[in-house]
Length: 256
Length: 291
Image (cartoon, rainbow over all chains, first blue to last red; front, side, top):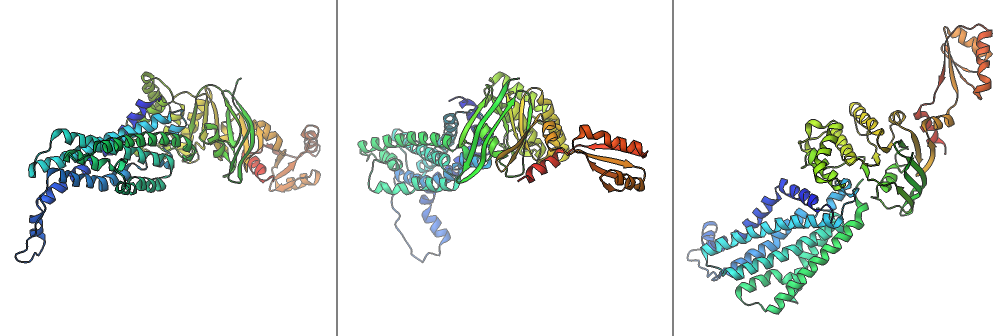
């Protein structure tokens, strides 16, 4: 792990100077506030934009705070993850393809240090983004609908962040293994298509985001929860390990 | 002189195409060697294998203790770093302690002539500046062996001169192996030549050795009038061009005097007698053409 602090500094500078620490959390914040707001003002929005017939009336469902947080997490799961995917899928493959990695790879750097430095910095962005997204959602939900219980809310947040760590590990692993195009497709399949597996089983990593919400609802079967948590951590560690091995193996893919 | 690099049977094969045939050569310390050859001869592939970025299909590379420095043909940098930040990072990653890294980076950048843009972002750099930054990252850790891929090919004449001067200064303290197809540069700064063609080492040696091998002793005898030149050509076999006669003397040592005797005995008025040395470019063409 020689050189980890130096590589961390490099990755951090890159993320900071390309404004990633600002705009990705901003996207999550906007996603987080959109559901509580649009749902609360749904009637006003319908009246303002639609030529609704005289005497039109619909019954909107009564939401509890957990419903809105779940809707926000649904947004993070679609658009938020796509933003993460698009921003970071080239982290390793693009550096190889455009030749910037060449000047680093000729030095006897540690590939684990290089991979971990990328993972840590992107995870930090992921953390700030999750905080921003949850804060925005929870703030507007609290103002408009009602309070959360702080303990289960925190548990839900931590659960979601651990899921994000897996997403980031998969993105980096794909980037280390393939060129950018194939890596993007591969990561998309694993992260998004994999979610369909949750229809069959509750204990897979893809269930983790919804399991977090079930904690708030106090409807989680804890054995499944711990299983999905365990699987996620295992998958993350395996992804990181494969990523490091592939990054080293693909040294000769650098443009010289 | 110690041997810094020893290459034995180095081979690279991509699919069914052999790009580099078994190569054998050695580099001695503090010498500079030019790797010459037309495009596609395998120069970059050879250098890539020496850096360790590309795995050879077969063969052994032995590099004496001490890091290597490498400058690719088109070095790419992180545009959001400054020149100093990048060179300092390169120094640290090559194992320089944090305390000295910044100082060394600063010194190196001043040496390559980037002293006044230390804190400018690389994004704003011109091609020549990037090339010099590329050299600074390659030498900041004082490597024993410096590998440069076409260090000056992409530069304009001024940039080329500047970079050549930097390299000449470096010659004293490190072993340099550089590829080029600009032969003037090779002529100017080289102890050893390696000619590559189609991945094979077709010629090697010092500049004077190679020159001797390919030298055809051509002489130009210039007179004051074309008439006299033609008259001389009737005594001595040669080709008349204006006031000059171009002659080739095989086996110079015994046969040289014949020329002067002929000139003396017939009391020609000679303006000059010149022996032509084959330029590296002519040698290059001969090596490349020799199928």
